[in-house]
Length: 199
Length: 255
Image 1 (cartoon, rainbow over the protein chains, first blue to last red):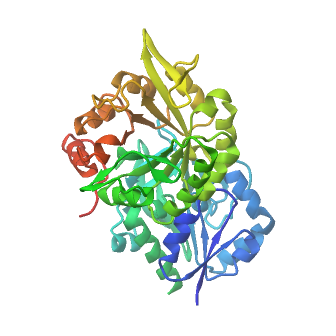
Image 2 (spheres, one colour):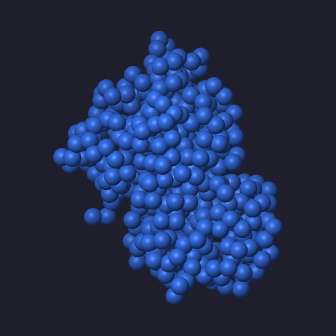
Image 3 (cartoon, each protein chain N blue to C red):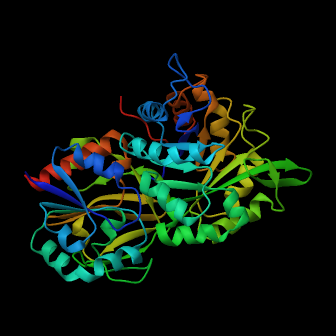
């Protein structure tokens, strides 16, 4: 049976995400060792904690993880997990995986963090329409600025800032919002992403 | 689009059970917070808050188990408040299944707990919970569930909480709490205008129009609602319909 692995940085709530992933019927494993986390059919980088601490957790195995992703390991990064796909972040020291060229910068909004339900405007990813997900739950202060905007598969806007709600580069996908906190439509969206990745 | 305004439903819990009577579609006092939280999610609640009012440490221990059971069934954000003392407590609550943690008295006694929590877990999960009471010429912050007056006033205290790392302010008017005669709009607006993080108005909702007032006149980003929903006075759906009709952006549940 195909296996989904949830990488655990050691901070935050993985229960809802684990449960949402388990609804797909695949075996879900939680792994704290980044090297072993890549021995899977689908890697999920969850979205809790601070950039620097998560980058430190990944650092000893950064090259192996990066190579696995570059070689086509299906991956879904959520919130901070999406930001870790990029090169670096204004939030803190440390290197991201750098599989999508670009930086992570502070959101340009009068109210930070950006917390609450905001739009998802798809530009390519079919899972959004299939799940009926057009508004999702966000909780973050930093946003991804890819060098090449063609990686963006959905956008959202807060105040004057339009930023990626989702990105994809080959088998590597990222979402800035929390599908596991975006009610039934979010859980369905996540299941669509997982099924697509493991097809 | 831009951020929608949120309706957050609060359940008072102790020993892992809901302690105030809840009337939900003719069901009285179901008692299990998980069942009620799920019902409110289906009704369109944007977030759920568990306020732990347990008196004893034994009761409190069951809170983490409750968070765990909830997180496996609830797919909107869960905030846990009440009795959180340290960054390690925050970590345990998050680990158990909370998405955000409310810190109140502990921050008043030792404000560094906000910074320590934000550095470890990110500002987005640190909610500074402020209880304020009106007095001559302004307001005063109270600790320990609204029982103990402090030397602080809520506007500068809210600012300090944000500087120290809080990512959200949950602002409760003690005078209005349970009175159902509307939120303290002046207090809400003063705090919302003073900080650059989202502010949740709490205390005083008697009807949907009060919620509209808190968001529009009070400049709040979200409104906490409890009694009027639990007693069946109104519903999340009815509140959101009124808000949408008034031109306030809200998340609508697909039918």
